[in-house]
Amino acid sequence: MSITSYKKKMINCFSKKGIKKKAEKIIEKLKPLDKKAYKALLAEMPTSIDWSELSNYESEDNTVSMQTMACSGDSCEIVDLV
Image (cartoon, rainbow, N blue to C red; front, side):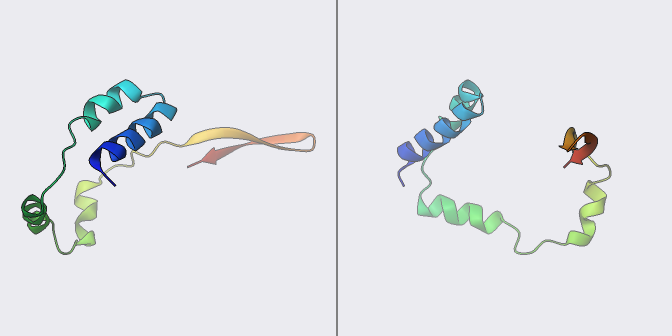
């Protein structure tokens, strides 16, 4: 896939989410990556991840849940969607 068609596909995706203008600014900065640059970036990537250290970085739960009504017959209850 060419970089131009990739950019168009991404903009189309973000348009559906209502953030087209913001996405366009970010996407326009994307540039093709040559093999040398790719290999240099790949060399900087970790080869393994020590998941036991995760708790040092994730000290609080930042997830957001939503509540919605679940109705069946003549009764409803509030359920959490995560």
